[in-house]
Structures are given as structure tokens and as C-alpha cells.
Image (cartoon, rainbow, N blue to C red):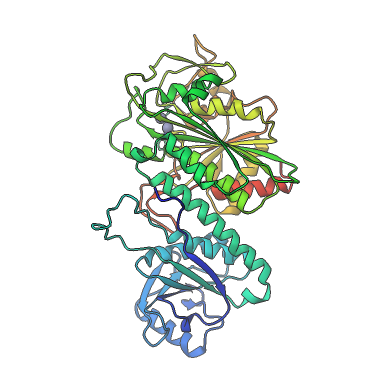
Length: 504
Ligand code: BES
Ligand code: ZN
Ligand code: ZN
């Protein structure tokens, strides 16, 4: 796997995009006044011509519309792409801009330099445009042999033209740096998720985390199978014992001077989930290479928080194991002793994410954080309930609501979920402290209840079930490609900022 992810060069400039030496210019269209183009600052002649050519090929300005025309006689570039924003009468959200910009660059694979001319009215919208544009300019080719690789290369540089860029330069510069950091983090996670599971066993996740964090002040500690056995991590070991490739626990610590709060981030890192002895059906099993998306997200998030120099301490744990049905695999009926001594009866070996998280929930409490988030592709039930684009969040009400608020600001779809009382009793085991499956109906919430059992009393906690949005097996859309999405990073970074501002 390539060491560090690629991010398109991002530039902010005042000036005229139509005379820029680029391959493509992206402009915005709207449905206001029937059809109009966002042309503040363009010459009257150019905007009139642009509008009439676009109209003649049927552009309407509708949301998500994408029209490509030759730039001959209008701009110096080869092509012009018009992205529809719908009506600008309602204030346009940063996420709408992010998606429009990403949709455009995604469609421009094969072109190198792109000029963006979208309404960047403040630093935050400028940042969102740059972020979306760079996220759209992604491809994963690590497993393509160069001789056969006909994939078009993604856009390599994006220049956002905005007359505001000079005026309030400092804030725009900060937005630009923020966008770079976030995209770097998301591309790192996407690469890890997209890598073939053959090439991404637990030891490789650990090696990738280590190299990603080299040269930072984040301390990385890796517990191998011997250390895990010595310290009693029975959940992680139980899940990993059916694989020839042993589990790893990655512990990362960011402790900046002056930090007043401390966040723990825990990620599920199942590098491949066959289900184990409770084997999954074959149809889409290959997508279970994405079952380490939570681990990828916490590694990427702690790096981003470090790069942004946020004044908050973070301890992150990535609990990595491969869930295979090998001869040494755990059996339904086995009882595991988790970190700290509590026991779990494994009634279904496919409910393995909660087993590895049980260990780290108990371990993380020893660090005395102020709040704990865990993030996991935990249940198929989450996909049934919320579909492919929305994650569930549950736990202590105030933490759950703070995560939802952070997600709204960051532009990621999360929805708050309850933990209904009656779903706890079905998790009772007749031989151990708890069983790893409960009532089938409300499976996402049962999983939440299971995790809650391992959260220290009084420790504020929320659980993020990203089973739906972590991996895009549907059509690409906005800045989201097929494959690994890199979901949850933006929400956790925003959450960290909110914790600094005192939300927890
Ligand atoms: N990794 C899966 C959950 C999953 C399903 C993620 C689909 C992404 C897409 C998890 O380990 C699992 O298999 N959970 C079981 C739990 C059940 C046995 C209680 C499930 O959801 O079926
Ligand atoms: Zn599973
Ligand atoms: Zn799983």
C-alpha cells in the first residue's frame, strides 16, 4: 500500500477563472430566475455567452445537475463544467457546496488542473468547496498493474477563484489548511479500507498507523498477540484466533500542552469479517474488507487533530483482528474473558465487533478520559434501519446529541437512536456475564446495550454505528466514490473542537 495518500494541490486566488491556464473551469448554475449562472465578477460578454451556450444544451441549474461544454471562445481551458445548485434563495449549505465541487472534480478525472468558480462567500464555504473538490479527486490504484491500468487519473490541482481571498486572507488561509488536513485524513482512511484484505491484516493496519503518525507528537504503541494474552484482552484474541494472521491493538496518544479535556476514540478494526464459524453468506462478503473502517477513522482522526494542533488530549484505540473460521476459531457457545475480567458467551461469532470493543472500552476507561466515542461498522441492522448513507449514534443523551450536532456542522449524516430498556434483558446469558447477541429486532440498539455494559459508570459515552455509510457499494455521488468512504472523521474532528469549546 502506498505510504501516504495523495491530495490534489489546493490554491485560493482572486482573479478571473476564464483566463486561467487550466484544463477545466467549474462554474455554478442555479434555478433562480428560471436559469442563471453564478457569474459575479465575470465580464458581461462572457457570462451572457456562457449562459446561452449552457441553455442551448439544456442546462436547468437543478441540484446535482452536471453539464460539460467545450470552452472554445469563452475560457482558456478545454472544457467548462456547470454544476447545478438549485435555488440560491435559501442559503446554500457548506455541504451542498462540498458535494457540488466533488461531483465536478469526480467527473473531471483525466483532466489535470481545474479552476473552481463557486459562490465562496466566507472562509467556511471556501473551505467546503476545496474539501469537496479534493475529495472528488480520488482514485485507488494500488492493485492495478500499470500495464493494464486504464483508469483515468484524478484531478491534480484545484484553484478556487474568489474575490474575497485577499480581503480576509488569514481566515481563508486557515480554511485552506483545514481542508488539506481533512482531505489527507479521509484519503488515508479510504486507502486503508480499499486495500485488499489479503494485503491488510491486523499487523498491516498497525504498520500503516505507525508510518502515518511518524514525525508527529502522537505516541503509538502496538500490542501483539503475546502482549494481548499477557494483559488479558480475551475479546480481541477470541475474534482473532480463527485466523493465521494474529490480532493487534493499536494505542495512540496525543497530549498537547495546555489541553484541558481528554477524549477517547475507539475503532472497530476487523480487517475481514467472514462471520467466523457463524459464516456469512457469500453474496457481498467481499465488502467486509471495510469492517476496519472504524479503526481507519480513529487513526485518521487523531492525525488530523494533531495536524490542526487542537488543544485537546486524545487517546485512540484501534482494535484489530481478522474474523476467520480457521481450525482454531472460536465456537458458538465459547465463553471469553475480556480485559478486566468480565465474561461473554459467544452465541454468534459474526457479532464480533462488540467483542473487540468490549476490551477497549474497559481499557480506555483506565486513561480517565472526559468522554468516549466508539466508531464501528457494527450491525447490518443499522443499514436496514437507516440505509446506506446515514449512521446511527446512541449512548448518553448529551453525548449522543453533541455528536449529532457535530455531524450537522461537519456535513455528515448521523441520526440519534434510543437504547430502549427492554432490549437489555435478552442479552442475559445463563453461563456468562452477558451474551453477545440479544433480540434480533432492533439489532443496532441491542449492540448499543451490549457496549454500554462495558462503559465505566459515569463515563460519558456514545457509540457511532457507521455500517451503512462506511463503504459505498451503490453509485458514486457528490464527493463520494465507490468503495471506502472515510466516514466519521469530519464528525469526530468537529466533536473534538466542540469539546474544547465546552460542549462536554
Ligand atoms: N460487520 C458486520 C456488520 C455489517 C453488516 C457491517 C453489513 C456493514 C454492512 C457485523 O460484524 C455483523 O456481522 N453483525 C451481525 C450481528 C448479528 C449476528 C447480531 C449482523 O448485523 O448481522
Ligand atoms: Zn460480523
Ligand atoms: Zn463485523
